[in-house]
Length: 178
Image (cartoon, rainbow, N blue to C red):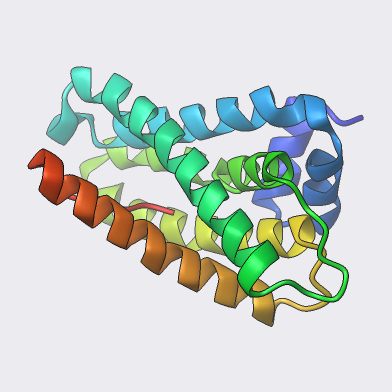
């Protein structure tokens, strides 16, 4: 079994084997949660000028909630609406793989340098999206990447819609990150 650091490196490198490993390891859920929190804190540190210190805790909590909601939506879409011939997954598998797909977000800490904030944030978002496609492909046992891309796109739209409605009900602006 790989260490947390090795798993983060594998997730960042988009290694399918790493996502397969965390999918199969039911004890890796706390590690996945830690990756989500670390990526949120890295983004918060990178944007500390705009968020302030109090925003770090809020970002971590929002990321944990977003992680769970995103995994749940992906689970439903991937196993009920667009299952592959070999799809067999549970919510825990998606929580673990999607949690590790947040690992590229660790580079957002570089946003603390004012000139790097926007480009690093953009790069991290694209990298995290690519990681999520790999994570979904592996967790849902898809034979190709196309179905995983479709699940991620549908999940993004549904997640955004849910956050938009909640934001309107609670009177807060909506921010969505992969």
